[in-house]
Amino acid sequence: MRRPFVAVLALAAAAAVIPLASPAPAATGGVIIGGQPVDIAQSPWTVALSSRDRFGGTRAGQFCGGVVIGPSLVLTAAHCLGPLVLGGPPERVRDLRVIAHRGDLLSDKGEEIPVSKTWVNPAYDAAANAGDFAVLTLASPLPQSSVIRMAAAGDAAYAPGTEAAVYGWGDTSGGGDYALTLRSVGVNVLSDATCERAYPGNADGTYRAVSMLCAGELEGGRDACQGDSGGPLVARGRLIGLVSWGSGCGQPGNPGVYTRVSDVARVLGSRR
Ligand code: ARG
Image: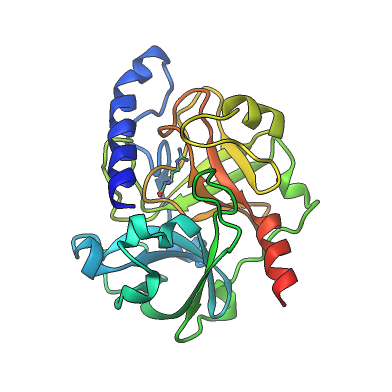
């Protein structure tokens, strides 16, 4: 997402100056925004997507997050594989890899696994940010213990008020301070009515309850941010969302929007 990515970052940076308006406790210094470092062993299903060719080696080429949903299957956001991020079709990124079991991007722990196949949800609508998911097939499998279960439709983990946690190596300030080690922050699942009120049809996107869910704090402060996309939102030990979009990061009234995993499960189920 070369251009828009930078544009969004600039927006986020501009917005980062505004939070003076609200004394949100954690507008700076988080994960992700408002979070803390976490041991990768606690979330072995969280992986980083990497291409050093495209993004350089200073952070091991990390550009998005992903989640292990089967020994050889990683779920991520469709927009992470879009031409605006990768500069062309994913097949052309020769060194596209999944980095697993490595919390510190600069360490040599864990493994870097080549991606043998990419599949982008054909219903992904980039203009609306809807249906934002894609599946990567790994060239070699991860252990079953690294797999997280997807919460099915109707699972209590989707209920408004549920405490969830989001994981990633993204911007920790809204100003382009990308993390070197995995971070996590707790956010609450919000009601569809709240999410619709926050995003009735903004320039950044429109909330659609079928394929999205939103989470955060109405007062702002805890959120995912740029670079966290595709990473997991977990509640009750199950995967409920993938980091997708939002207006700025951690701003009051602008919760983070996630791909709703029950919709992913529905689409993937109907393919089999
Ligand atoms: N689109 C962003 C990415 O590519 C994720 C933005 C999430 N924003 C938010 N406020 N939760 O990394």
